[in-house]
Length: 244
Ligand SMILES: NC(=O)c1ccc[n+]([C@@H]2O[C@H](COP(=O)([O-])OP(=O)(O)OC[C@H]3O[C@@H](n4cnc5c(N)ncnc54)[C@H](OP(=O)(O)O)[C@@H]3O)[C@@H](O)[C@H]2O)c1
Image 1 (tube, helix red, strand yellow):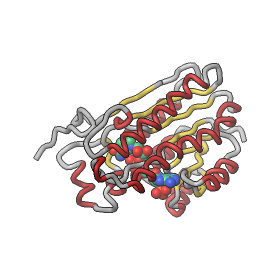
Image 2: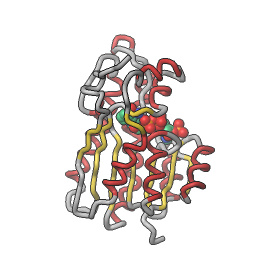
Image 3: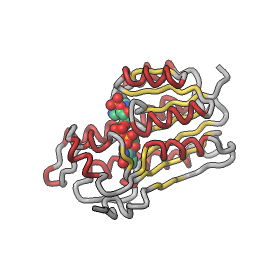
């Protein structure tokens, strides 16, 4: 296979789906992974990619997924999210486990498995979608911010460990992006999720996808290290200019 290929985790919605579409438009063959395979199959048919079931929290699933990827030039570690907004005193240990398993260990599993192929490509790129939560903390957010900090640390450590190898690393840290993120965080409560974006102009998934597309289109010697991107209406993690 000589076509450049990209792997996008969490491609069944939001940022991952938009990124898969963007990279396909730029000529990549895209392997799209997530648990909701019906959505992936529809997406893969539209972009001429390959849909593969993937649960980043499951060793066997990750092995089957990465074994099926013949060549890997770009890995987008995007699968992740938040559960709940509980203060430490009321922290739900299962929510914490979900956040750490998905964001941190999921990124570790995929990166570890695909690193040899990324190096073999001669010009590999790892994009990890962390968050502004990887750089700050906020009340009720400790499960998510700690997981995103850890995911960021894992990604940044690779920058040193891979020095001298043909692999670039880019961390993308978005502020508020309107996707299914808040719906997942609040257990399907659509009204609570909608309130997160009420009165602001949030980023949309395509905004992040275009940035990832730009990163992937730079020449091999250019490494865009860290990109923090927020809506104009956002300052710190939880500080917004709301209208109305
Ligand atoms: N939206 C924001 O405001 C925002 C801001 C900063 C950072 N981020 C980060 O951006 C990334 C994408 O989130 P999004 O906003 O696009 O939210 P989203 O629409 O909820 O997408 C999350 C994706 O992750 C996948 N996923 C969840 N658990 C998974 C698992 N165990 N195995 C494989 N895939 C899994 C989901 O697919 P399945 O459910 O089908 O498996 C889905 O495709 C996340 O890492 C999130 O933390 C989001």
